[in-house]
Length: 458
Ligand code: NAI
Image 1: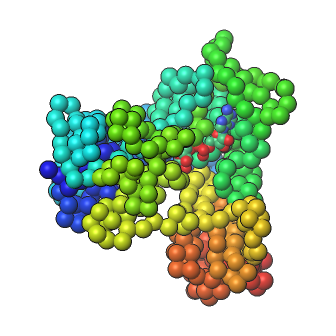
Image 2 (image 1 turned 180 degrees about the vertical axis):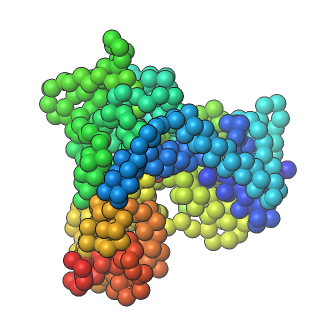
Image 3 (image 1 turned 90 degrees about the vertical axis):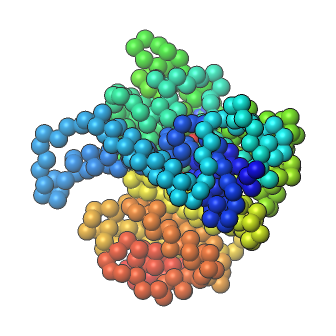
């Protein structure tokens, strides 16, 4: 009898399993994929970051002339780039197997079915546990009528493993996945057109920062068609025909492409788990509903990560998992969802935490804001990474409410502002903190000073 069986070994599940074992619980983690790490490690965050890095190095070669460096004869070995990505993934998934062994977590290989509270069937074996934690994650939302074959019509999984560079990749959806993978293939030589339903990219991100990102990504070769809904994708002569409708108008256009990436969001994976028979409550969008302790409507069955409401982010799933098992072990586990950062790993990066200006306006809130562009930051000028800005939002008395960055290393810079928000810091406190010179982080300090009306370099 286990204290806890975790179903799913993604960042939510495997971290929860390890933390529970550290707290003295007898834990097993069931995973049917054949390797640990879930979508994030196998076909998500990690392989995409490996390809973003490799493609970024390739793209940089054509911009070295301004540094006085001439590069001749550079060529792309896509198979070697993919092999490197696969090795990064393989090493990290094996690392989790090592951590399971080190912490005494049993790995049960197979797909789990909850046959009753406390009973999990995997193959012919029924495993018993005091508590069950569902961490089954999410999968790409399909576009009705468009069948993903992972050869020509791709989800993110197929787009991470193409064998040749497409001539024209049409990306449906200007969200995180569409922009990251669109940029990978644009850098490697594809023409990339991003078709987005809304009249802006990156829904949910502060609008001003999203505009800066769109401008920078356009400069780097991505073509955007905003305010357009993809209606169908058909195999045509010599490729695919993508039918696009202008939102609010009757106009229909056709775009020809050789590959299409469907990146219109993700949905929770909860089928074949036995949840219906157990009457586990699920909301109208298919997410498992949980209470403040991550318990589902059935006592002893818990759920975390992408399969419950909230941002679909690996680090949020980890936080859920740790808080959930700490609660099971009698500790006060808690996640502050208002301070979960989000990062888009494009060039430039887009990073954000807390509220957007749109949300503050909609709520009729009083607030102050400050902004500092990287063009005025000396480190950015020396490296040539001048696109973008840091924007901060605060209450009238200066308490940080949100921070948004478009710029090189934005994903690292945001950490300071997340910590500031967690500690309830004010703009003055961040601004009074000594920031190294020359550093991109000085833009954070200057944005806070700007909100206080005293930026030095603006
Ligand atoms: P998303 O929800 O970020 O963006 C999807 C976009 O598709 C939206 O802008 C939507 O308006 C558009 N869209 C929907 N239907 C359309 C249609 N028929 N025609 C044109 N546009 C249409 O979804 P995405 O990029 O698939 O990402 C899914 C999840 O994965 C997100 O929750 C994201 O946070 C997470 N993720 C996070 C990453 C990171 O943290 N770096 C990386 C990759 C994914």
